[in-house]
Amino acid sequence: MGSITKRMDVQKAAEDVRLRTLGKIPRPLDRFIYLASTRDYNTGLYHHEGLASRYSAEVACEALADCHREVYRQLLFCSLKDLVAQMEAYVDSSHTLARDFISVWRGIEPYRVAVPVDADSFSAEFLFSNFRIALAIVEQHLASPRNSPQAA
Image (cartoon, rainbow, N blue to C red; front, side):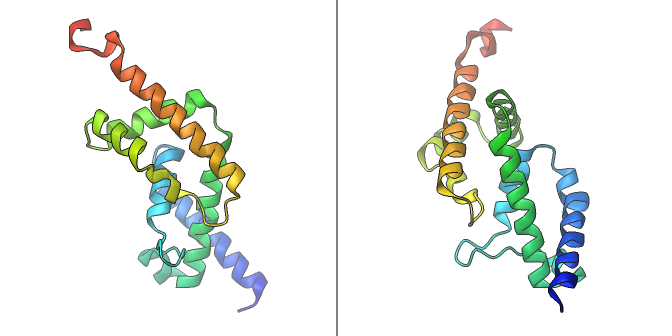
């Protein structure tokens, strides 16, 4: 397969991912976590059975990696206010108690393994810092009196 044909296949597969899968995932943070979950942490390769059956395993891997980098850039450039809103919505959708979620995210920082393999360390640390700040704000929102049962 020529490199131009392969790249066209990767672009077509990436568009497929955007429409069929990512289009159903409401927020960049959710998409970011989802795409990271398709990557094998031992090899750094992405896998999606349906996409691989329509294209090839290699094309699917590259398409998922492209989408992951795209969503990563979206998170890098979103405002802190938007990141807080996304995190609050993500916590709500996690089927976990908010305090447990915050404890785990603060303790083991699972977002550290979610960045694309080729992300530069400066931008990754910037995003990690924003995640920590957003997490602290979410925690503060949960502790505020207006969110307590007495305020209702």
